[in-house]
View 1 (tube, rainbow, N blue to C red):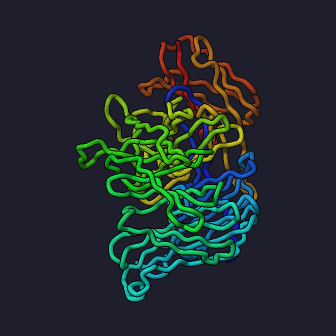
View 2 (view 1 turned 90 degrees about the vertical axis):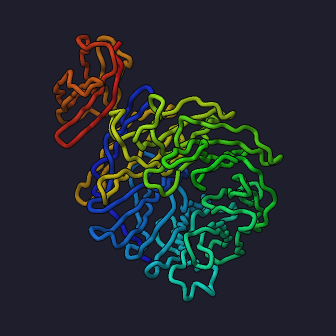
View 3 (view 1 turned 120 degrees about the vertical axis):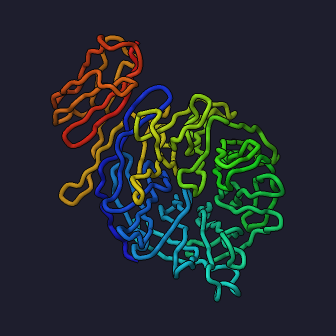
Length: 515
């Protein structure tokens, strides 16, 4: 497979600073035409590796994925499409890993080889994004699969072991009937050769495996499945032999998707739960637990009723857990906003920051519009912690009935978004320009200041709106200024929204408090 250099006709990447509970961004990125999303993000040596979705339009006959590399300044340095002419699908926030030894990439997903017939699919790339090998994983029920109408296999996650081997988890439909309701685990060498193949004992562990984590201390691995009436953390050795399991969530769960992270001597797990009685339209809520690797006991368990876990697309409730340089726990998910004692219709990315004991330090939600009551269709998929302690996370958003937008947010260590990135194509090359904008002081009394790291070269229009959406102040700002002061003495006390735009589009969004 030849590497395909893929240029995006991006509108923009968006990031703007705000204060208080919500965080807004004002630009999206997506290829035109097409449908896209950011599905998985990895960080290695201050570079960022993103798995993105691309759908052929207008007939949407081919779905595939690609890898995009960004440097430490978020400049896109290379891209590659995985088999542009094949129907490829993937999981959310998984299916993609980077080998730190040689910066090779492994993708695990699904390939459609006939109508209603799908195999597991693995692709390995070198550091230049050239394909080294591909491999299809056939249905384990071979006696049925040869003649069955719907043999379905989906690889759900892949992880690199300390020795450079791969642990792959997949799901299949038992006897090629119904949905993918059984799981298997494969260990393979760096060349794609299978070392061992294990079918999960469905009489004991009854739910599908959707994610796993490798234990670097012994090359074993952890995964989660339902056992009896509880979700259990399961530890297997490097040969796939199960060593122990620990129950941690006995509540009714909305789905079997979850996220977890190995942090020194503990395993952190994010799952969801429903509050009985369970009725149609019930929202799942966030549940987090810390389990000791040595004693197999629970360190702490926390339930967050106000953090809903609700996928916009009903495909999986995405939860991701990362550890910050200061030892705090960052949890990302997608949910609906809880406001005035009820859940709204907004689907938004949510970041929750906890200390090492699972106590909440802060939480923020992220939305394309800054109208707190406006319906949003944001889907959070994955995140990483950056060397500066900030977060980089992304996903997709409904553009219309057929199209999605990819979105990507870079925050500081407190979850605020101080940067704006504009993207354009100049002479057939993709250019990302970075501008740092700041609004201060906040709260403000007499004046607010807009500061630019790089002076804008064009005039801009500043518009300030009150919470009712009324324009209360408008001002034209000339180009080539580093700082602009705006007098707000005439404004009443309260919250105001700031929009800054130029002839080429929106530049900045934020809000401030007049006191």
